Amino acid sequence: AATGKGNYRHFMEKELHEHPVVIGETLRQYVDPATRAVALPPLPFNPAIVPRLTVTACGSAFLAGLVGRYWIEGLARIPVEADVASELRYRDPPLAEGGAALLVSQSGETADTLAALRLLRAGGQSVLAVVNVDESSMARESDAALLTVAGPEIGVASTKAFTAQLSVLACLAIGMARARGTIDAVREAALTAALLELPGHAAVLLEDGATIHALAEEVAQARDVLFLGRGNLFPIAMEGALKLKEISYIHAEGYAAGEMKHGPIALIDPAVPVIALCPSGPLFEKTASNLQEAAARGGRIMAFTDALGAPALRRFAKHVIELPTVDPFVAPILHAMPVQLLAYHVAVLKGTDVDQPRNLAKSVTVE
Ligand code: G6P
Image (cartoon, rainbow, N blue to C red; front, side, top):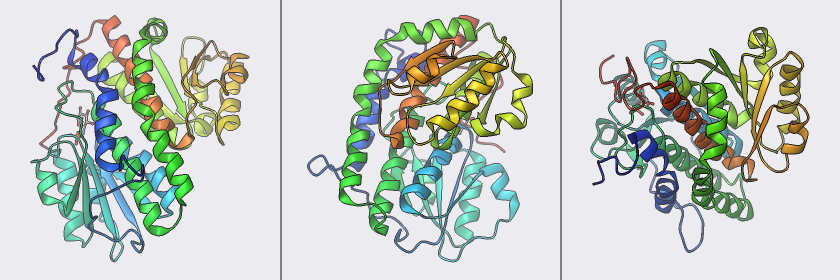
């Protein structure tokens, strides 16, 4: 049955294996299969003139929203502010006249996000919600909703809902960029092509469990772990750290690679794995040089990269994991999967309650 675990040990494992289908199904909603152009339903605001967007959410959904900020600012050139809902709702933020808000939530019921939605609407913002549950409070109370097609997610730690949220946000950024005239048809076609290749990449990644499992055996020994990334991979570094602490109870921090020298570098020694998201692209050299600094201080570097980035990283990294080479725009979606898998395998090795980690709830409907 759709709600059973099937042959998997945990719901989380089952849900990780649904990535190819869920990303594919979600993209099918927002990319026209014939023209391969992004096709969004009507938005509650006009992207061509909206002055500013406020993104808010909680937990992993917030980190998806942060990736959305990089995409929307980078492609559509709209200023985006992003803040966790529990802060936004009490900050009394000055809202732009004619501005819009973007809410991200799997359940559509998280208390802080829902309260932020109400505040933003009362403040005159047009509210667009990216939600997984069609009949949820957020779907009903927003001006429009873009659905993720992740199906029910049972594991407390979000997996497939997260990559589905990213898939929707990527399409939204492309669609808004087209409305604003900030990308041309050639670039749009390249971006949608890169998105449509993701289900295939996900399937290959899931088949090769051994690489991540070997890494997990090392990470499971650690007391502290540092995740590093730059640009649109910085939120994925934070997601990797969040997942690891949620389900394996290992202390982890996700940091902007360039900010490492302002603090976490003091923690680095051979017992602290440094997990880097470092694909080829415009920021590769910058992140690689941060990693080299960490390696010079004894840091045990485990780097996720691609065929283009691997040779340079092999000179100093302990483990280099080659993912497919993709357009840097879609790298966050690709890299989200191995960091989730890693957390899963570490948790299994540690014998924690993977689907029901202590003190956490799937949906936090009280403040
Ligand atoms: C809880 C869950 C997280 C989730 C967050 C936001 O903390 O454990 O996995 O990211 O709530 O939930 P939502 O339903 O709003 O996405």
